[in-house]
Length: 93
Image (spheres, rainbow, N blue to C red):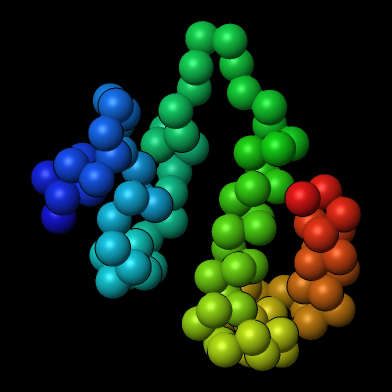
């Protein structure tokens, strides 16, 4: 799988968990901060956190067939919190 992910990522020197198949990513493992590529010029932390949050919400909604209550349960947040985050993310993206 690693070779496949690398082959499908031409020109890149690293692959991330996002390059791996869903069945591998969904094993319950959480990315640690040490797995984030930290370039010399730094990172835009607010954007990185927003992108990560958006990815988590999108995946939860995909897994639940768009059911916001179930997605909120998966993310261990209140449904109203999920809805507010979705609204905020829609304004940003």
